[in-house]
Image (cartoon, rainbow, N blue to C red; front, top):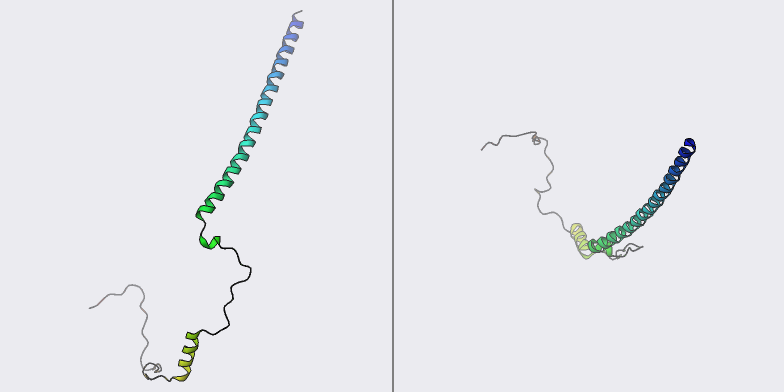
Length: 120
């Protein structure tokens, strides 16, 4: 009789543990579902926040629509360039000292390296 009572008690405890296990699994499933829902909400809110921040802090160059074709310059020559070209071709240099060739007699200046002392 004692074995029968122990077996029944163990079966009862096993049934209680199975019921508790089922309740815990249901609670775990609900919490996992809630975590997934909150993660999805957070993702949506994060996306909205990023979009709003981009709208607020976007520069004017980023707001301009992208143009497929680059802006082409006109083929007309620029007035200043043509005047400069004409001046270069028509006039001769008047200052002869500016165009003197380098003389080999003079030694070229040496480049300083490191610290140099300042002498008055």
